Image 1 (cartoon, rainbow, N blue to C red):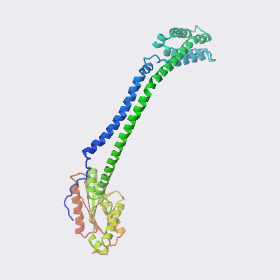
Image 2: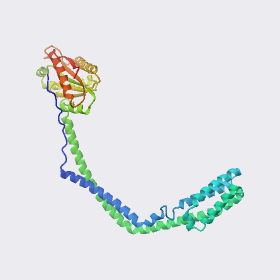
Image 3: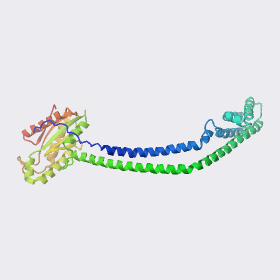
Image 4: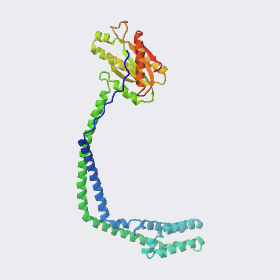
Length: 383
């Protein structure tokens, strides 16, 4: 049978949501985000209002910057004492102690220490002097270790003073925040609950939209399937060709020979069963490499990857042989055979423009098989 070139069918599209529904959906989401943003603004505002002095206190220019540095400097000096009083060789002990003293000096040499602690300047001077004496080997190990007590004591004083000042700053912070805690708590709770409410409304609207989208998608899927066999229909064939643009494909058209006589002999329910059986057989014979379609009535199509014409011929041959092995009965076949097929095929490079010609070529090959007595296959060499 020769048919006209198929045109690509228009695909079902989702209808846009009504403007009012879109507006409501966006409004709930916007209100929710605005509520959570307001909550963050409130927290940041309260924090900066209540303890700006604490922020300055712990910044890089504040008076407590060196707390950790003073502790580390003290630890280095204590390590230097341990090195000087250890049993290791004098050369190694002096070198290790000199390195620790240099590290402690670098950590303790801060403007804030020199400015606020009277012991800082003399201690740094003593460390500088001690490092020079050790380098010149003008002091023994025990004397050097004893000389480190004064700088260690100074650093301990700095460390303890900074801890006290930290405690005072924290107490001031706690006192100043107490009067704002209730306002912040209840305001935050109110804004948070409002945000959750708006978000719940947003999620409810989103679920409704998703449900509508899913229903539309399911409808589109059903519109692309043949309800009897479960395989694709003509629209699905067109869509799949467009999805495989520029790929080398093979199109196989299959027609059941004398299907009307089969229906007359067995009845339409048995004819429907045969259609389902043949759909399964075609898929199995082609090793599930093909996408199958029912184009209407007793006509099927298969779309599969096809690098060359010989591959397509092999598929067509397998299809005819597979049906003969299945040996479906056909009591009304004029040639006293079982169910037979007429198969036509063509190769093409997938494109919106080339598919109609490939379909026509495959259909002509199918027609030639029918005119030659059916129960066979042909492939158009040049589609």
